[in-house]
Image 1 (cartoon, rainbow, N blue to C red):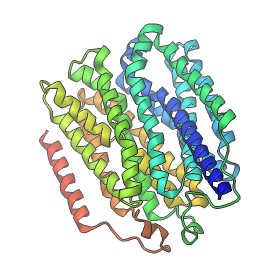
Image 2 (cartoon, helix red, strand yellow; image 1 turned 120 degrees about the vertical axis):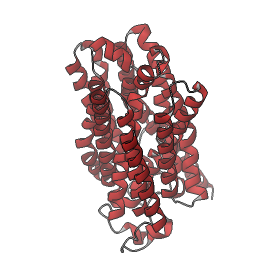
Image 3 (cartoon, rainbow, N blue to C red; image 1 turned 120 degrees about the horizontal axis):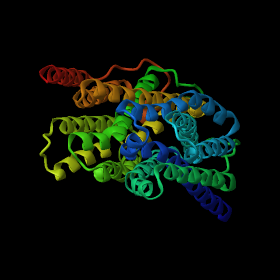
Length: 439
């Protein structure tokens, strides 16, 4: 009895260490791209960039992640997480630390690409680490905790990074981020250990479900496309909110990143509760919460788009906070569901595929957003594109089944979405199209 109690205590402590290391790695790698959005006015003035070029920085960051996500997932399934996690953080940290030595836009693009490779691999590896170490009834809560670190990176980028950049220069501020990434790699070297492979994974599904690889079924691919659409809306919002508020609402440059930090605060406050509700109240259901987040995010973007310039700052802050609690906080549930649908044998590959779609959406959509804003001279069409993306994502979630009973059942045909969901999607889509025609 005492031996089992000691082993259980050691397992809990080990999981806590893994969660801290995964959260730290995710925090520092995304601090790079969040800082691009927060420092966009300074970057634009220093390097004489257009809005489309600002979007290209973010786009190239996620392009770097696209070719790396699936191979690193495959390697993690076979070789473990530890070695890959250390190596990619070293490469990313060295690249970002070299920014003070670069003085051209092209050099900055190269660094963003290498940092993006680190981002894509760290996302897959840390998600795989949590899937390996945490039991299924706690997995969404653990994922939510790790994604809280992502939101915290946004808060730091929106508050501390502008002040640091004004004090020591924006290039030196990025170098500090590179140093933090190298410190995270050192922490993983000293403290991380892979889950032993002799025995069932704590997060694995029952044997009847675990014997088959399900990452090629229709529900999984619908979920992957949802990641593309939701990620596009999320990172377009992050990249362009400060510029939008400065150019459209006249918010001073020194204050334009503040609302972005507010949105990240809303995401931070909601990620862990969403995971806990999914694990405990909904008994493993993920889709209802994802649908609700998509609907709330659409409502927030439509409100932001339709509000006149003289709207109270309090109302504007409430709308931005609402988007943060919905459009920026869905990643934990998305990755939890992707790992569960892939199963133990292919969790790394499944997470790699899901991450690839996430990165492609994060790459393509900010570029389209900036292009539409430059061509039209306004942000109406750009925000409308994000509303359409969210609408399509909510509709596709109707094909994704997530109840524990369905996850453990043998393979079979997947029922179509409920008629009410199809009708709601069609009506809302028609309303959005009518509004575009009228505007």
